[in-house]
Image (cartoon, rainbow, N blue to C red; front, side, top):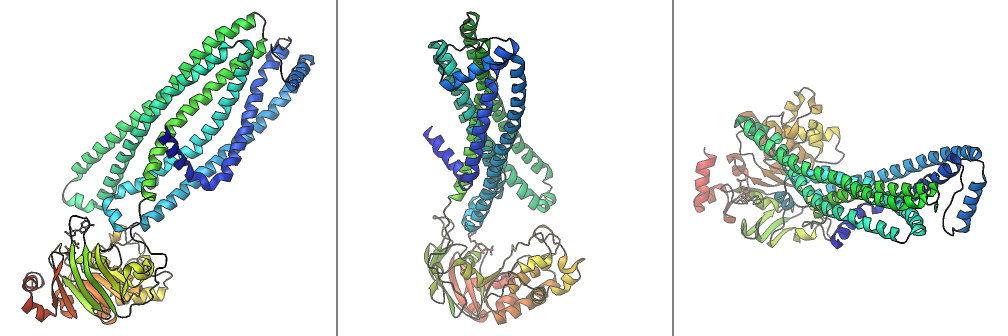
Length: 604
Ligand code: ATP
């Protein structure tokens, strides 16, 4: 129970920025509740005075103001009272409608604000977390957090919290009315009312717990579905060429069935609550009816007072039923909120220190000193890397697949931090630099360069905030992309499809290259495509690279002879270690691995 309150409090904390609206909504609910009480109280004059023209009889010492109201009601003519009540009722229901609207609207403002805020916080957090986090999580799971889980939080705040406050107020009011009448009749009656409550709450709590567990299962299945969707839609090409449509369909059906199964289980339990509580409530009401009915027959209380008593008991059932649903919704929302917090509370591993240096330019050297790194503690991918790169140099990294070349270059923009040793720029440890300033010095063109489903212009402009049309065209020309872009149906305004689907491999690379050129960063990291490009594309990309190599400091993961030969120095990496540094001809002499690679790959 303590855990429930702690977790619920954390959930409600999402709404802390909307305190004002919450308080206003609660006030409106208070007013609506009073209106509910007054409209129920009208049973007394209506049945005792208007319908039967008898005296209202309450067997107790009433507070003076209530006694004077009853005396006044007893003195009025039934017809006069009927007209007065008609006007009063219309006014009452009009204002009740206004307050109900206000409370619901205010609670929805709170709920929608919370969704907006939580989505923004999650999205911002996604981009603060390092790549190591993304390697651990599935895309579909993360999308689920921001689409489905956030929905549960709105439910809990817009509806469950509203229902909780309003129905607690109602239940409290009707309990007070019922108990005060019950006390005037017999002392056993209130005890009976008190026995009914725990009877109702017991199954509510038990079922609520089960619903929370099921909700976690449901969300896990939802994440599975989203992951499968994302993978197979992005990988539609692979699915087709391997004829795996049937297999994928079966896989989807399987997970979809699991989702359906858990969903129905949860719905069954939620739906069981209402009839259950209603039955227990009705049982209690019938027993009470037997006792109090006798008092009316004996003339100890008037029919109207009996009506109010019964009415308040019956009116208690609805809020209690609603409160039981509130618990189930809250349990689902708590499960969702825990999942959301697990991301919001995730430690941001790569961040700028408070007094981080805002490095503006690269002046002299990049240095890797005794660098060790592994994606996991157990497996070392880079082992004792020592490397100096001077401004203006072109370094080609070569080595067998999986040797650690991409890993090594990913340390420079601080996509990962080394576990030992340091990486520095101009003598400053990267960890002491402001991350955004550091990354501004580096442009990357990688094998898996993702293009966005936008126009060619937007894809290139992504490299620089507020880039002008001239700058974009200039970058496209430098990347030898201008001519093919001009020939596209809408030129620079052509939409290029998801991940650049509508462009050829070579075209995609040149757009990615134009984007990197536009960034005007002094250091360029190139991860050459391993896939075969047509000879025209290859020639154009080569030309573009040559120009860049003259202007910038380039670190290229080289798969092509041309890049290797143009490099000032070639670094040979094997199994996470540097096994040779030198020029092409030096390495052919000194490093057997290089000779082997050269013969195998570059001469192929
Ligand atoms: P290639 O030329 O094939 O691209 P590479 O030399 O660039 O290879 P890396 O991509 O740096 O090699 O990978 C080095 C090792 O680290 C490989 O064994 C790879 O399986 C592993 N690795 C790469 N990325 C991750 C990751 N995100 N999580 C865990 N291990 C990884």
